[in-house]
Length: 394
Image (cartoon, rainbow, N blue to C red; front, side, top):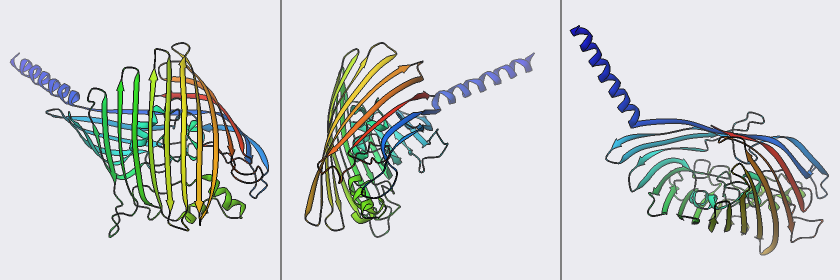
């Protein structure tokens, strides 16, 4: 009897330790899968100055939200301090292909004042302005501004080799800063980046401001931004017309300094949300004084017809000035997007959306062509994309 009592006491004590350990640390597996059917018109089917026009139909992935899976967790270290981590990778469910480098991978310490993390992470523009934009919320990939140069959805690049601070919430105010190292011996400033931002959320009002600067992009492959730089596609068009691959445009720019500014705000009621946003991207190339200044002005709105059914719309006007060797060109884009989404459950929804882009500023038979972000380049100054699909989160 005595042995049985001792055994029961030991088992109870072990169970209590297991419960305490479980309460002090946690690991969560999460993910998103998004796939559907997509139609795009005026797709280029051959290189040259007179592109053949074709339509593209197919099953595509990542239409509204990039598919991903990840692990996130925290361990309670006591006195309000926690160890935190995230490991997240992307993929395309349409063909099973991976998305290359990890989307995010970081580890750090969280306290009551804020969180410090090290690794590969989103910049302040994606953190503070993305949630105020259509592409960073309901619209997804195809609602991004032309070429996604401002990186509002975080998918154009993330900062590697970075140390990041994110403050706690002070009566609705949050702020943060990040620095991405070049990791290059003897070249501290090559391919480095830094980013600052702040946000405010109180009741129906949200606002944000952010700045990111990356120096020496393309100077090496081990720095803060690796192989994901995009110059305006109209520059790539010019190279294709000259019989060269569009990728040569980046090489022609040389190393790039990119500065992104932005500010935005939104107001929401029980069923309606409105948002206004401005971003500016300034790119300076090291070769032949190449420059590109891109201003995006966005208005977006979303209305919940029922708790399950919503309608969304966005309009972006983009004004772009390109310069090289003393010459300059102005290009303008008008982009319209509409979406409807129906929630089948808390984790599964179906959607349909359409995006139209109109480019102007040069004669019709010259550049630029339209190119909806995430779609193939157009053979003319106009392009229409329609997609419908299903998304599941776990």
